[in-house]
Length: 354
View 1 (tube, rainbow, N blue to C red):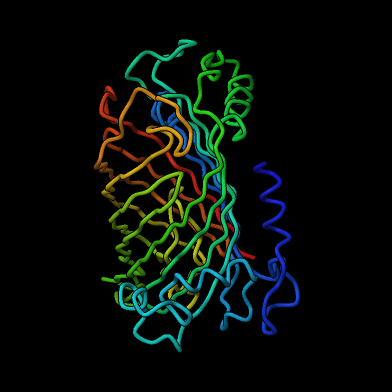
View 2: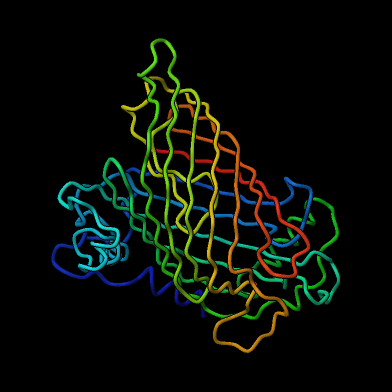
Protein backbone atom coordinates (compact mmCIF):
# COMPACT_ATOMS: atom_id res chain seq x y z
CA UNK A 1 0.00 0.00 0.00
CA UNK A 2 2.80 2.42 0.89
CA UNK A 3 4.63 1.70 -2.38
CA UNK A 4 1.41 2.14 -4.39
CA UNK A 5 0.81 5.52 -2.77
CA UNK A 6 4.35 6.69 -3.51
CA UNK A 7 3.89 5.66 -7.15
CA UNK A 8 0.65 7.63 -7.33
CA UNK A 9 2.29 10.74 -5.88
CA UNK A 10 5.13 10.61 -8.37
CA UNK A 11 2.66 10.34 -11.22
CA UNK A 12 0.36 13.14 -10.02
CA UNK A 13 -0.92 15.31 -12.90
CA UNK A 14 0.00 18.87 -13.68
CA UNK A 15 -2.34 21.71 -12.88
CA UNK A 16 -2.80 25.18 -14.29
CA UNK A 17 -1.56 26.65 -17.54
CA UNK A 18 1.52 28.09 -15.86
CA UNK A 19 2.80 24.74 -14.59
CA UNK A 20 6.12 23.35 -15.74
CA UNK A 21 5.85 21.06 -18.76
CA UNK A 22 7.11 18.06 -16.80
CA UNK A 23 6.01 16.86 -13.36
CA UNK A 24 9.52 15.47 -12.82
CA UNK A 25 12.11 17.63 -10.98
CA UNK A 26 14.45 19.81 -12.98
CA UNK A 27 17.82 18.22 -12.22
CA UNK A 28 19.87 20.76 -14.21
CA UNK A 29 21.49 22.13 -11.05
CA UNK A 30 21.17 21.31 -7.37
CA UNK A 31 22.72 19.70 -4.32
CA UNK A 32 22.70 16.07 -3.20
CA UNK A 33 23.04 15.40 0.52
CA UNK A 34 23.45 12.21 2.52
CA UNK A 35 22.95 12.16 6.30
CA UNK A 36 23.77 9.28 8.62
CA UNK A 37 22.98 9.16 12.35
CA UNK A 38 24.24 6.24 14.42
CA UNK A 39 24.93 5.63 18.09
CA UNK A 40 27.88 3.37 17.22
CA UNK A 41 29.94 6.57 17.39
CA UNK A 42 29.14 6.59 21.13
CA UNK A 43 29.66 2.86 21.68
CA UNK A 44 25.97 1.95 22.13
CA UNK A 45 23.24 0.19 20.13
CA UNK A 46 19.89 1.21 21.62
CA UNK A 47 16.98 3.66 21.47
CA UNK A 48 17.53 5.91 18.42
CA UNK A 49 20.16 3.63 16.94
CA UNK A 50 20.27 4.57 13.25
CA UNK A 51 18.88 7.01 10.73
CA UNK A 52 19.72 8.00 7.18
CA UNK A 53 18.39 10.55 4.72
CA UNK A 54 19.16 10.97 1.03
CA UNK A 55 18.02 14.40 -0.17
CA UNK A 56 18.10 16.40 -3.37
CA UNK A 57 17.41 20.13 -3.51
CA UNK A 58 17.31 22.31 -6.60
CA UNK A 59 19.35 25.41 -7.24
CA UNK A 60 17.72 28.79 -6.78
CA UNK A 61 14.63 29.55 -8.83
CA UNK A 62 13.25 33.06 -9.32
CA UNK A 63 9.60 32.10 -9.75
CA UNK A 64 7.10 29.51 -8.58
CA UNK A 65 6.53 28.67 -12.24
CA UNK A 66 9.93 26.97 -12.21
CA UNK A 67 8.93 24.66 -9.34
CA UNK A 68 7.64 21.10 -9.82
CA UNK A 69 3.86 20.75 -9.29
CA UNK A 70 3.86 18.72 -6.06
CA UNK A 71 6.15 21.17 -4.28
CA UNK A 72 4.36 24.21 -5.72
CA UNK A 73 1.25 23.34 -3.70
CA UNK A 74 3.33 23.84 -0.55
CA UNK A 75 3.59 27.57 -1.23
CA UNK A 76 0.15 27.91 0.37
CA UNK A 77 1.90 27.03 3.66
CA UNK A 78 5.22 28.86 3.18
CA UNK A 79 4.29 32.38 4.23
CA UNK A 80 4.98 33.81 0.77
CA UNK A 81 2.81 34.67 -2.26
CA UNK A 82 -0.05 32.19 -2.03
CA UNK A 83 -0.24 31.76 1.74
CA UNK A 84 -3.24 32.80 3.77
CA UNK A 85 -3.18 36.11 5.62
CA UNK A 86 -2.78 34.27 8.92
CA UNK A 87 0.33 32.40 7.79
CA UNK A 88 1.82 35.53 6.23
CA UNK A 89 1.41 37.33 9.55
CA UNK A 90 2.68 34.37 11.54
CA UNK A 91 5.93 33.69 9.65
CA UNK A 92 5.64 35.56 6.39
CA UNK A 93 8.21 37.71 4.63
CA UNK A 94 8.25 41.50 4.73
CA UNK A 95 8.56 41.61 0.93
CA UNK A 96 7.15 38.69 -1.07
CA UNK A 97 8.36 40.20 -4.34
CA UNK A 98 12.06 39.59 -3.70
CA UNK A 99 12.23 35.89 -2.87
CA UNK A 100 14.17 32.89 -4.11
CA UNK A 101 12.78 29.38 -4.32
CA UNK A 102 14.24 25.92 -4.03
CA UNK A 103 12.43 22.59 -3.99
CA UNK A 104 13.49 19.10 -3.13
CA UNK A 105 12.81 15.43 -2.49
CA UNK A 106 14.13 13.18 0.25
CA UNK A 107 14.00 9.55 1.38
CA UNK A 108 14.45 8.96 5.12
CA UNK A 109 14.65 5.86 7.29
CA UNK A 110 14.73 5.86 11.11
CA UNK A 111 15.35 2.90 13.42
CA UNK A 112 14.67 2.44 17.14
CA UNK A 113 15.41 -0.52 19.42
CA UNK A 114 15.22 -1.28 23.16
CA UNK A 115 18.28 -1.31 25.40
CA UNK A 116 18.29 -5.10 25.73
CA UNK A 117 18.50 -7.68 22.94
CA UNK A 118 15.85 -10.00 24.44
CA UNK A 119 13.29 -11.45 21.99
CA UNK A 120 10.58 -9.76 24.09
CA UNK A 121 11.67 -6.29 25.27
CA UNK A 122 11.44 -5.83 29.04
CA UNK A 123 8.66 -3.61 30.37
CA UNK A 124 9.66 0.03 30.36
CA UNK A 125 12.12 -0.18 27.46
CA UNK A 126 11.56 1.44 24.09
CA UNK A 127 9.72 -0.77 21.58
CA UNK A 128 11.22 -1.87 18.29
CA UNK A 129 10.17 0.62 15.62
CA UNK A 130 11.15 1.57 12.11
CA UNK A 131 9.93 4.35 9.83
CA UNK A 132 10.46 5.02 6.14
CA UNK A 133 9.25 8.18 4.42
CA UNK A 134 9.33 10.05 1.12
CA UNK A 135 9.27 13.84 1.42
CA UNK A 136 8.56 16.70 -0.98
CA UNK A 137 9.78 20.13 0.13
CA UNK A 138 9.67 23.81 -0.78
CA UNK A 139 12.20 26.35 0.53
CA UNK A 140 11.55 30.09 0.22
CA UNK A 141 14.29 32.53 1.20
CA UNK A 142 15.74 36.01 1.15
CA UNK A 143 19.12 37.16 2.45
CA UNK A 144 18.10 36.95 6.11
CA UNK A 145 15.73 34.03 6.49
CA UNK A 146 14.40 30.85 4.95
CA UNK A 147 11.08 29.04 5.33
CA UNK A 148 10.91 25.31 4.61
CA UNK A 149 7.77 23.21 4.25
CA UNK A 150 7.94 19.46 3.68
CA UNK A 151 5.10 17.02 3.09
CA UNK A 152 6.05 13.43 3.90
CA UNK A 153 4.17 10.20 3.35
CA UNK A 154 5.64 7.18 5.07
CA UNK A 155 5.07 3.99 6.96
CA UNK A 156 5.89 2.82 10.42
CA UNK A 157 6.25 -0.91 11.01
CA UNK A 158 7.69 -3.88 9.07
CA UNK A 159 7.14 -2.12 5.72
CA UNK A 160 9.84 0.37 6.75
CA UNK A 161 12.46 -2.39 6.24
CA UNK A 162 14.22 -1.32 9.44
CA UNK A 163 14.73 -4.92 10.52
CA UNK A 164 16.30 -5.83 7.18
CA UNK A 165 18.56 -2.78 7.32
CA UNK A 166 19.81 -3.55 10.82
CA UNK A 167 20.31 -7.25 10.05
CA UNK A 168 22.36 -6.39 6.97
CA UNK A 169 24.59 -4.03 8.95
CA UNK A 170 25.03 -6.51 11.80
CA UNK A 171 25.85 -9.33 9.36
CA UNK A 172 28.40 -7.13 7.62
CA UNK A 173 30.02 -6.27 10.96
CA UNK A 174 29.76 -9.92 12.11
CA UNK A 175 27.79 -9.12 15.27
CA UNK A 176 24.64 -10.76 16.65
CA UNK A 177 21.27 -9.79 15.28
CA UNK A 178 18.57 -8.34 17.52
CA UNK A 179 15.90 -11.02 17.95
CA UNK A 180 12.93 -8.88 18.99
CA UNK A 181 11.79 -7.35 15.70
CA UNK A 182 8.69 -9.59 15.69
CA UNK A 183 7.38 -7.34 18.49
CA UNK A 184 7.85 -4.09 16.59
CA UNK A 185 5.15 -1.45 16.20
CA UNK A 186 2.80 -2.65 13.42
CA UNK A 187 2.36 -1.17 9.95
CA UNK A 188 0.54 2.12 9.56
CA UNK A 189 0.69 4.78 6.88
CA UNK A 190 1.83 8.15 8.18
CA UNK A 191 1.36 11.66 6.87
CA UNK A 192 3.25 14.70 8.12
CA UNK A 193 3.68 18.37 7.34
CA UNK A 194 6.91 19.86 8.70
CA UNK A 195 7.60 23.57 8.99
CA UNK A 196 10.91 25.23 9.72
CA UNK A 197 12.00 28.86 9.65
CA UNK A 198 15.58 30.03 10.12
CA UNK A 199 16.94 33.54 10.69
CA UNK A 200 20.57 34.10 9.88
CA UNK A 201 23.01 36.05 12.06
CA UNK A 202 26.55 37.07 11.16
CA UNK A 203 29.06 38.45 13.66
CA UNK A 204 32.21 38.16 11.59
CA UNK A 205 32.72 37.81 7.84
CA UNK A 206 35.89 36.69 6.02
CA UNK A 207 36.58 40.20 4.74
CA UNK A 208 36.35 41.87 8.17
CA UNK A 209 39.87 40.98 9.36
CA UNK A 210 42.87 41.82 7.13
CA UNK A 211 44.87 38.72 6.08
CA UNK A 212 42.77 36.53 8.40
CA UNK A 213 39.57 35.22 6.78
CA UNK A 214 37.81 34.14 9.99
CA UNK A 215 34.03 33.79 9.98
CA UNK A 216 31.42 33.59 12.72
CA UNK A 217 27.81 33.06 11.67
CA UNK A 218 24.78 30.86 12.19
CA UNK A 219 21.03 30.89 12.52
CA UNK A 220 18.17 30.53 14.97
CA UNK A 221 15.30 28.26 14.02
CA UNK A 222 11.70 27.55 14.95
CA UNK A 223 9.93 24.49 13.63
CA UNK A 224 6.87 22.31 13.99
CA UNK A 225 5.79 18.85 12.87
CA UNK A 226 2.10 18.08 12.41
CA UNK A 227 0.89 14.61 11.54
CA UNK A 228 0.36 11.00 12.44
CA UNK A 229 4.06 10.14 12.60
CA UNK A 230 5.10 12.96 14.91
CA UNK A 231 3.65 16.18 16.29
CA UNK A 232 5.93 18.66 18.05
CA UNK A 233 7.20 22.24 18.33
CA UNK A 234 10.94 22.97 18.46
CA UNK A 235 13.30 25.89 19.02
CA UNK A 236 17.03 25.87 18.34
CA UNK A 237 20.17 27.67 17.27
CA UNK A 238 23.19 26.74 15.20
CA UNK A 239 26.60 28.43 15.15
CA UNK A 240 29.71 28.05 12.95
CA UNK A 241 33.10 29.62 13.51
CA UNK A 242 36.29 29.05 11.54
CA UNK A 243 38.16 29.70 8.32
CA UNK A 244 36.04 30.96 5.40
CA UNK A 245 32.80 29.61 6.82
CA UNK A 246 30.08 29.43 4.13
CA UNK A 247 27.06 31.67 4.74
CA UNK A 248 24.12 29.31 4.35
CA UNK A 249 21.22 27.57 6.10
CA UNK A 250 22.42 23.97 5.78
CA UNK A 251 21.67 21.37 8.46
CA UNK A 252 24.60 19.38 9.91
CA UNK A 253 22.26 16.63 11.15
CA UNK A 254 19.32 14.59 9.98
CA UNK A 255 16.09 16.49 10.72
CA UNK A 256 12.55 16.64 9.28
CA UNK A 257 13.54 19.30 6.71
CA UNK A 258 17.32 18.66 6.53
CA UNK A 259 18.84 19.89 3.28
CA UNK A 260 21.99 21.54 2.02
CA UNK A 261 20.68 25.02 1.31
CA UNK A 262 23.09 26.42 -1.28
CA UNK A 263 25.73 28.78 -0.02
CA UNK A 264 26.61 32.19 -1.39
CA UNK A 265 29.90 31.96 -3.30
CA UNK A 266 30.47 35.72 -2.92
CA UNK A 267 30.63 35.35 0.86
CA UNK A 268 33.86 33.30 0.91
CA UNK A 269 37.14 34.47 -0.66
CA UNK A 270 38.70 31.02 -1.25
CA UNK A 271 37.59 27.54 -2.30
CA UNK A 272 38.42 25.94 1.07
CA UNK A 273 36.61 26.17 4.42
CA UNK A 274 37.17 24.59 7.84
CA UNK A 275 35.00 25.37 10.83
CA UNK A 276 33.63 24.29 14.20
CA UNK A 277 29.91 23.66 14.79
CA UNK A 278 27.91 24.20 17.96
CA UNK A 279 24.16 24.14 18.51
CA UNK A 280 21.21 23.25 20.73
CA UNK A 281 17.50 22.50 20.47
CA UNK A 282 14.49 22.16 22.77
CA UNK A 283 11.42 20.22 21.60
CA UNK A 284 7.91 20.04 23.05
CA UNK A 285 6.55 16.62 22.03
CA UNK A 286 2.80 16.00 21.66
CA UNK A 287 2.93 12.66 19.84
CA UNK A 288 5.74 10.34 18.76
CA UNK A 289 4.50 7.17 17.07
CA UNK A 290 7.82 5.37 17.67
CA UNK A 291 7.17 5.67 21.42
CA UNK A 292 3.43 6.22 21.86
CA UNK A 293 2.46 3.78 19.12
CA UNK A 294 0.44 4.14 15.90
CA UNK A 295 -2.34 6.71 15.71
CA UNK A 296 -5.21 4.59 14.37
CA UNK A 297 -4.29 1.10 15.57
CA UNK A 298 -4.65 -0.41 19.02
CA UNK A 299 -1.10 -1.21 20.07
CA UNK A 300 0.24 -0.76 23.59
CA UNK A 301 3.95 0.13 23.70
CA UNK A 302 4.28 0.15 27.48
CA UNK A 303 6.15 3.47 27.51
CA UNK A 304 5.24 7.16 27.43
CA UNK A 305 7.10 9.93 25.64
CA UNK A 306 8.68 12.79 27.56
CA UNK A 307 6.89 16.07 26.94
CA UNK A 308 10.11 18.09 26.65
CA UNK A 309 13.38 16.92 25.12
CA UNK A 310 16.58 18.96 25.08
CA UNK A 311 19.82 18.41 23.22
CA UNK A 312 23.07 20.03 22.22
CA UNK A 313 25.60 19.13 19.56
CA UNK A 314 29.15 19.99 18.57
CA UNK A 315 31.47 19.04 15.73
CA UNK A 316 33.30 20.29 12.68
CA UNK A 317 32.95 20.76 8.94
CA UNK A 318 35.24 21.11 5.93
CA UNK A 319 34.52 22.26 2.38
CA UNK A 320 36.46 22.23 -0.85
CA UNK A 321 34.79 23.88 -3.83
CA UNK A 322 31.38 22.21 -4.18
CA UNK A 323 31.96 19.31 -1.79
CA UNK A 324 31.30 19.59 1.94
CA UNK A 325 31.59 17.14 4.84
CA UNK A 326 30.66 17.53 8.50
CA UNK A 327 30.48 15.48 11.68
CA UNK A 328 28.66 16.38 14.88
CA UNK A 329 28.07 14.57 18.18
CA UNK A 330 24.65 14.97 19.80
CA UNK A 331 23.80 14.59 23.49
CA UNK A 332 20.03 14.23 23.91
CA UNK A 333 17.97 14.05 27.09
CA UNK A 334 15.54 11.20 27.81
CA UNK A 335 12.81 10.76 25.17
CA UNK A 336 10.55 8.48 27.24
CA UNK A 337 9.85 8.46 30.95
CA UNK A 338 11.45 5.08 31.79
CA UNK A 339 14.59 5.57 29.69
CA UNK A 340 17.59 4.67 31.84
CA UNK A 341 19.85 7.49 30.69
CA UNK A 342 20.35 10.22 28.12
CA UNK A 343 21.53 9.26 24.64
CA UNK A 344 24.50 10.19 22.49
CA UNK A 345 24.94 9.60 18.77
CA UNK A 346 27.06 10.86 15.91
CA UNK A 347 25.92 12.44 12.64
CA UNK A 348 27.76 12.40 9.33
CA UNK A 349 26.70 14.70 6.50
CA UNK A 350 28.09 14.69 2.97
CA UNK A 351 26.98 17.28 0.39
CA UNK A 352 27.91 17.82 -3.22
CA UNK A 353 26.66 20.63 -5.40
CA UNK A 354 26.64 20.36 -9.18
